[in-house]
Length: 426
Ligand SMILES: *Cc1c(COP(=O)(O)O)cnc(C)c1O
View (cartoon, rainbow, N blue to C red):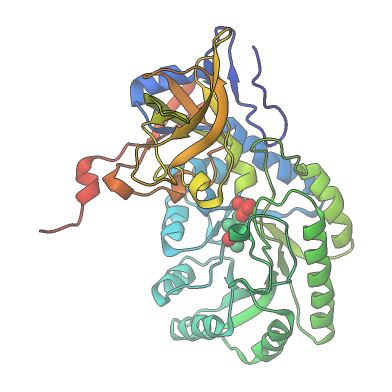
């Protein structure tokens, strides 16, 4: 078997060209899948998902962390089930994600719930589901949760999400631990909330949560943030507040092109010494690290359009399917599903059919010559791909496929036109 050009921990090691030059996922050639499903289609490798989870589990096994996979990265039920079966809990940010968590029978004691804007209804549902922890992001939210718990005569466990004001050196839109973002509570305010919280009869503030951002490539921002929170926790304990859960968030970076992010082992080596001799239950919330390189978006080239200054590959997938290039100017590899040696190479813009100039997957990318009817894949699309997709331009959302070894299953059907207008009235 010929491996693809990407290898290693968070690269696309389950996507590679076989001897005949067909792009495969695990043991299945993509052309076989696309023959059945058509395009655009998301294709995920079950093995990559399990292996990435196992890497974190293994690297941190000495502290037996609870790994709550961040559902918003990829919330397909089959993906969630794969992770829950392998021992993961889930990190949710909405009532909809709680609904998904329950569909895959994730035990409540393995669910943590973050987000700055939880509604009363969502809070009630989470209390009913007996989740492990609410990650609370403001004082009014804490008061509301307490009020609701009291009315339901239930006791809830709460972590305050602190904002440690560190710069994770990532894209501004995925930076969450700087003082000017809407996330978390600064140390001074958090301290007085913990101290005041003894008065709360139906909420126990027994945890601390921090999540500083996403696609963070080095250990330093994490170490800086975790040092700050440990100092803070020590101070709280002196004041008589007992902290049991330390939720360290997600944010581990992956390889999209030439990044060189820390591996799970390197991350653990940097982090574990900080927590030596401390008895907290550690929680992690990885999302991207687990699923980004487990998935691709496959599309068909509809037209090759030449202008005076450009060659465009116009595909049947668009920014409504994968918005990361438009939203974050993100880089994604583009691979043909059939490897072509000895063909001309051209510089293309790979674009979608949507009426927006932001509708592109790659700009000025050198690729082997492609023709109308050829298939290509947008790589590293397993995280924040389908979950951020929309029906813009009244396009039906893509179908999703999960590959396991030599077999594959459609785990979400392509939407129909009826799905598009469901609930609408004239
Ligand atoms: C989005 C999010 C995560 C996951 O982030 P990744 O960068 O995908 O690992 C974890 N925790 C919280 C609170 C989040 O909002």
